[in-house]
Image (cartoon, rainbow, N blue to C red; front, side, top):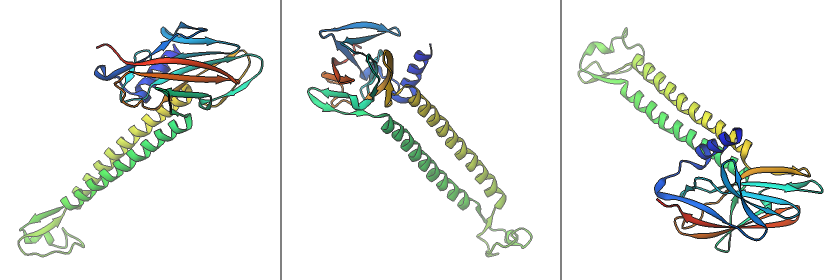
Length: 254
C-alpha cells in the first residue's frame, strides 16, 4: 500500500496529470532472457543474468508534454556495488538521450519555488504601490487639510486638494500582506511535499548489498516529437553486467 501511495503522489506532484488527448505509453519488447512480470498490479519487464534488473514503465501512460518516469529495480549477487543514474543509458531512435539525476530534479524543484516566490513578491509589491496611490483621495473640502485631521500632511486647502487616508492604507496593506503570506505558505508546503516524495522514491546513488533488491524512479528527459512513435533503448549496468531493454513509444488508443 505504501508503494502504491508513493507512486500515486509521484504522478500528481512530479509528473503531472495525464491528458487523455495526449497520453503516450512505453511498451516493453521482450528480448532473450526477459519476461513480463506483474509488479504492484502493473506490468514490468525483467532481465535475468548473474544480476537481475526489472523496469516498469508508467502503467497508465504519461502526458506527451511530460517526462516518462521509469521504476528501476536491481539485484546483485557476490558483493555490494554502487548504483545510480550514471549506470543507466537511454537511447531514442538510436540517439543518446538524457536522464535527470536526483540532484538535478531537486534543483529544478527548488528553482521553481524560488521563481514563484519572486513572482509573488513582485505582484504584491505592485499591489502595495497601487494601494498607496489609492490612499490619496480627491477632495474639494478645504477642511480636510486641517492640522487635526491631517497631521504632517502637506497640501493645498483650495478646491481639488487630496486627503491621505492612512487608516485605509493600513487596512489595505494588512490584507495584501496576509494574502501574500498565504500564497507563499502554499508554495512552501507544495515544495516540501515534492522534495519529500523525490527523496522517498527517486533513484539516488546507493551502495546495494549482495542478494538485495534496490529500486527507484528515474525520469527520462522529454522525448522529442513526443506524439510520434519511437524506439527507446535502455541499458542498465549492474556491477559491470549490462542489461538491455527495448520499449516502443506509442500514443495510447483514445
